[in-house]
Amino acid sequence: MERITDSPDGQADISAQEATSRQGARLPRPDEDPGRPANSRDATRQGPAEALGLTDDRSHNPLRLVMLSRPGDFARLAEGGVARSHPLLVGRFVRNDLDQTRFGFATGKRLGGAVIRNRVRRRIREALRVMAPSFQPGWDVLIIARPAIVEADQDALVGALRRVLRSGGVVGGRSES
Image (tube, rainbow, N blue to C red; front, side, top):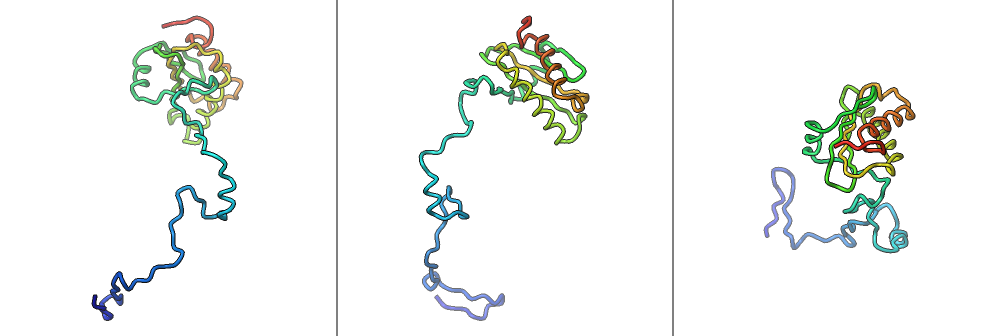
């Protein structure tokens, strides 16, 4: 290949045979942390990595909530089922053919910004986790937060949630279909 030294952009063309390879150049492995020395990387590896909460069967842990995720499930709750209300929240209940109770949350922009809505969802989720052992199986539940929930303390939230779930038949009490 011919060398061209006077190109308009000031660059020179070099053939592939003339290019020198860098000694020791390598690509890091995907599981490698370049900030740690190689010997400390190998010392921490003692076996296969355990999956962190990634399971096919989510109902094995009674304290783990099973969440609604499909738009069709939310639509079914919106168009039918039983509704129970409280000044802090509204609960909508529909029977399902499963051996578990699934939950969905609706936190509209009337509650506030994203930080406030996320906080409300975390508070509701924690209250539901406490009540999880007393859930009756076979329900889809939609919890719709009202603006007053933002200022309510956790005890008031738990009380309102317990009252709504009991009147809907999800926690003890009567069972409605």
